[in-house]
Each structure stands twice: as C-alpha cells, then as structure tokens.
Image (cartoon, rainbow, N blue to C red; front, top):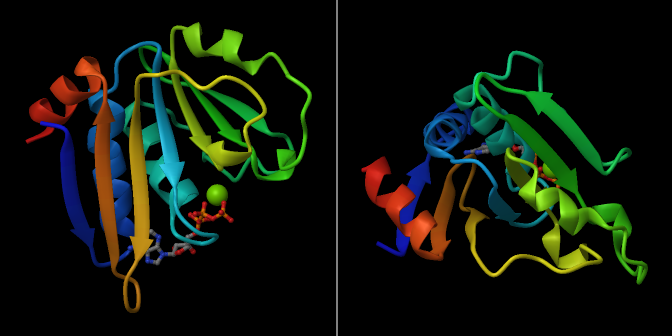
Amino acid sequence: MKQLIVYTKDYTETQELGRFLGAAAGDNMIFLMKGIIGAGKTTMTQGIARGMGVTRNVTSPTFTIQKIYHGTSMDLYHIDAYRLEGIEQDLGFEDDFDNGGLTVIEWSEFFPGQLPDDYLSVDIRPLEGDRREIVLTAHGKRYETMLEELL
Ligand SMILES: Nc1ncnc2c1ncn2[C@@H]1O[C@H](COP(=O)(O)OP(=O)(O)OP(=O)(O)O)[C@@H](O)[C@H]1O
Ligand SMILES: [Mg+2]
C-alpha cells in the first residue's frame, strides 16, 4: 500500500497516529513532515517520539535546527529546516540519515542537501477547526510495508 489517509479531530488524535508511526519505524528511516505553519508537524512528532519510547518532551527545534532524543531501541533525529530557507551551503546533514535511528524533517523543502529517494511523506492538511487530513505516502518498499503493518 502506497497511501493511507487518516482524519483526526484534535491534536491528541494526531499524536496517537504519530505513536503508531513511531512504534512501527525502523532504523535509518526518514519521515518528511509537510504542511503549513501550525498544521501539526511538531505535534505529530511528539507522538512519534512517544511511540519510540522517548520520555523527554519534544519541542520545536526551530532555533537549533536539529535535536536528538533517545528512544528505547533507537534515537530520534528531529530536524526543522525552516530557518535554512535560501541557504545554499551543504551542511553535511545527509550523512546523518544513516544514523541508525529515525530522522523526522519539518520543512524539508528548505533543506540544503540531498534528500533520500526513499522516505515516508506525512502531509498534514488543516480542515475546519481542529480537524486535520493526514496523508501518509510511502516512497519505497520499506515504507509501503510499514504502512501495511499499521493497519
Ligand atoms: N488535529 C490536530 N492535529 C495537530 N495539531 C492540532 C490539531 N488541532 C489543533 N492542533 C494544534 O495546532 C498546533 C500545531 O502546532 P505545531 O507546532 O505542531 O505545528 P507545525 O506544523 O509544527 O508548525 P511549524 O511549521 O511552525 O513548525 C498546536 O497548537 C496543536 O495543539
Ligand atoms: Mg513545527
């Protein structure tokens, strides 16, 4: 299965979906979080972290670009590339994608470097009020298998 669409009615449901994704994630996986400012990318990442057994509270890494959290069996690399818009310089982040953990990137469209061919896209689209349409799209077999196992 390549795509899964989930509707949430508040932030707790988005975190719940994140928890399932975090629990299903394998080492060296990449999730690219899409959506406008305030869509819920960081909120979802908090759930992903919980699903990986991270006990620290995940906060927006906007001012540090990358934060690393220790999970039960692997680490979470949380990157927010928003402030990197317009930067041409290669920051060497792509070496980190084989970090043995899960890399979650917000604003990957501003990421100044090569993104991997295989990844899970998590597109959060605000509907009316607190409702969100969340479109999970698998790019690559590993992510397809992960989505199948989520159901
Ligand atoms: N269904 C929902 N799913 C996720 N967040 C929701 C939902 N309903 C309301 N919210 C609220 O929307 C806000 C989302 O903020 P969040 O920081 O997660 O967005 P973001 O996409 O990471 O934004 P940014 O681009 O600035 O990093 C939070 O205050 C959250 O509580
Ligand atoms: Mg954010």
